[in-house]
Image (tube, rainbow, N blue to C red; front, side, top):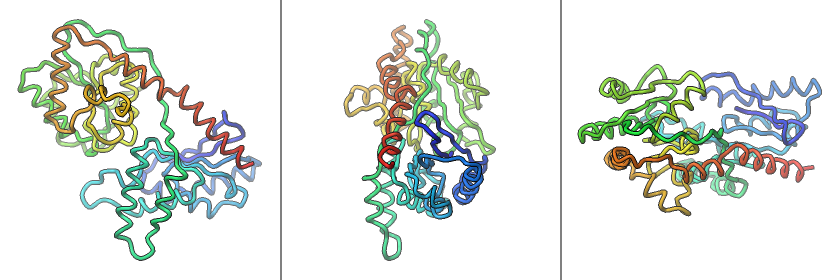
Length: 357
């Protein structure tokens, strides 16, 4: 999504690109958006700032738009970066990583959706630049941090989930795109271990489904068919929240997560979360200030430790001692609720626009 803030801090107009493959979107987005802006400007529209996502090549865009638009302060929001994404073997295109770099150079302000996103991008750019020809832009890479800030996305806040039904088996939920970077292989291994230990559980396997489904997902659907409650892409938000409220534990096995909206939404209503100790997860949980959360909600990244964490919650379930995780819910609601996040983003944008006038 690429767009502009129009007229006031509370009136944002976002222009959405056609729904095509993201690679082509990055390649031609600057031309497409420049054409759109030219048409709107001819009708008298005016803007205070340019606000774009990392899918837009901002350097190209600023090079082909009018002087009036080029002079506006620009903010680019990185919800991901093209270096830290775990591409499949021999499929990484460094052209897109370089597009990310030129976009940060062209931007006046660079927002990241997590410190992990920022730090991984800067670190990997420096590492990759060592293999570039002469005149690698090391100074430009080092300047990214100075113009960047962390602006977490917001989440929709829902009422806390009700207490679980006494005697019901532990209900796990895994909500992610059904692709290799979400690592369903480890999920299958952990579920196999739970089953071999005789632990009773139910599982919901939800998320966006693509033409090619990972083999491990097919095995889970076959092997644990009698234990599955929700499966596949859910038709609307109401059903999605219903699925979350029916679950006890949200689990992730991801190798790629720059923020983790589904994690934040699940935690905000009181689900216990069990996440690998990597990526953005320690940051979301704020384990630096709360080491107890690391012990309770992070596992060492192996399927065995994931199964161990789940089995401990299953023991609590069998004893009738499992309750919604209210402390975690409060943390996520206060920190990531849209009421908080929108206000902070508005204030930041307003300060940028005022400083430019």
